[in-house]
Image 1: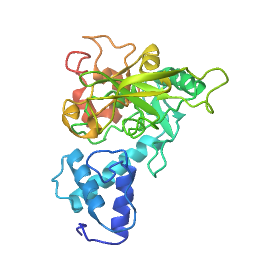
Image 2: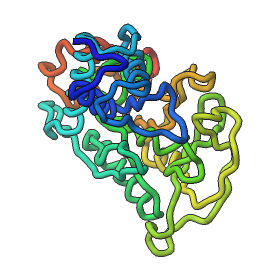
Image 3: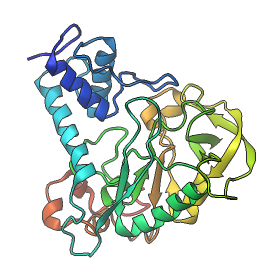
Image 4: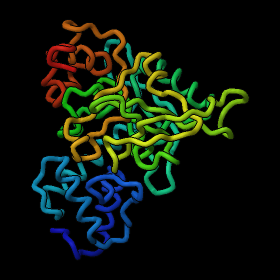
Length: 317
């Protein structure tokens, strides 16, 4: 069976639902008027664009059609994402670490609002909760596009095989809760250098504890997906989220090299923060981090385990 532009029926609707769940929203790049696909069972132009986006990120032949190979990849990625959200809290590691979950805030008026929880390694979660509690105290939100990543998750140009996500040391804020509309977004991204951003959380008076709302301020050089280099000034009640994360051991990463040249929005990476506490340059290995939450038997033959000898700040960054 081949699904393509013009196809109709329950199979098309199922594919649309999977694409929405995976956040391939029918546009090659995000925009302020972002919407999810209509799950109407009609394979139209938006569905074709969503399929093309998924194929591009999965290293598949980009023809905008759903045949056996693309369908299998969609089903596999869907199953992986489901495990990331609902897998058991203990992953069989002898090191004594577990994986814990923390509720997060949905954001947006469309169908896609981010995850309702984030999962991280237990010691990382302690630090994350410090950030989350302070943001909520001051009237902000903590959104989520995920934390720990399934060992068999697809690797692509925007998903490194040695990502901190595999070890439960990284989190992503909901990717559509910033860089869309600075007037209403939960977060604004201030460009502070080439491919580098400082993230501020918007705070609302009706959400803040009494006396905790930060003073109004103007943030210069705020960029969006449409205006990636030349920013604007935005005034409001903001908390310096990047600084708060740093205080608790989390660091941001740079955007992908192509992003500021008009590349895929998924390379923006403003949403990514990783916990680097305890890592020793030239000594800590990627494999040792994986073994803190997984057993060797679980790791065997998985893509990340192939990079177990990579050393922090030598060939693993």
